[in-house]
Image 1 (tube, helix red, strand yellow):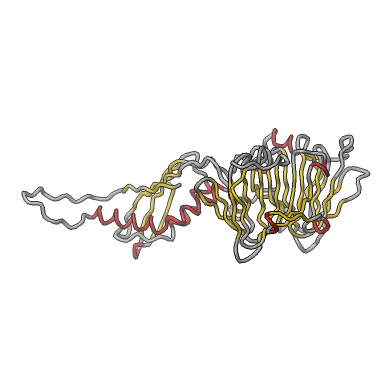
Image 2 (image 1 turned 45 degrees about the horizontal axis):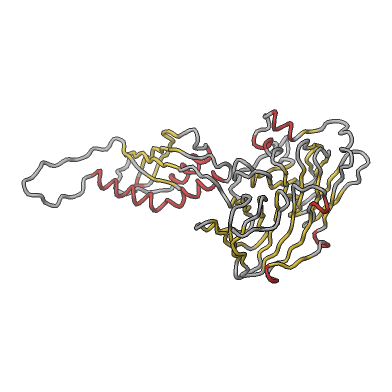
Length: 397
């Protein structure tokens, strides 16, 4: 993914007169430095790849050249690093990450006070299948005189970071005794799945509050006014938000975007009534029916699907795969698939490439993309599975 190259500043190349008979020559100063730089880059390539992965968790539109000017001090250790230049498509976060990594490096053969320019070329990515929540940047309102903001959000899957077509998924954390104010999404439905803690969904006048605990989900129809409230006073509520189609998550990327704000309409004062016939649909995780799959090596709890919600845009399951279970190569006809890995992990194969995944990571498989999966051999793997739209029967590629 990353091509590393190097050039040098203020270094003198020592030449030698031509000889009639070639004789072995000691390496020049520039050659010694080149070897030292190559060794340093090889040693720390993993750190640069890690920085690139963190940047891709936010957006796939990361590509181009980054040049760092590095100055060494005593013991050949890097004393100072600054950005010499960068392409507009190299994010500030990526540049800052590589800069911080380079501050810990050592470049032998470079005298104290010498500088070297290290150019890094990042190749654009066409897609991304696994996103780590740890790498996704935190978004949300800034705290106002409090130690913590009322809520924070990480975008796990959307059209920007995975090219997802029909769905966006975010990881929402509501602080103790806080809430997401009354709002509605005029053009999309939403599902909330409680990962940790407890939450309450409040609606317009006449709507009974819906209390949710870990493993519960609620379907919220488009245009339905609602509040997401953390009832606890000690523990944050962690929630998966699933938007179908994508749209409201854009306000987290740019709160000033008028189009994004229209998709996430904050309601002040009387929120009015719910759309005619619209209602919340609650699924209790502990009481959901269990269906065996993969010859008994997986169990599926269907929480929400069109038979319950009347909405073909979404289906939500909780699936547990036995240790060592595997899914043969298959494709979801017309339906994108999202997995939030609650525990365990495994490996997904797309084409000839392997994509490992683990707990607290999101997996996105585009519609009609042939793929296979295998799961950890030493423990079960539990995932929250979302299809958008609700899937048609699988087809063999």
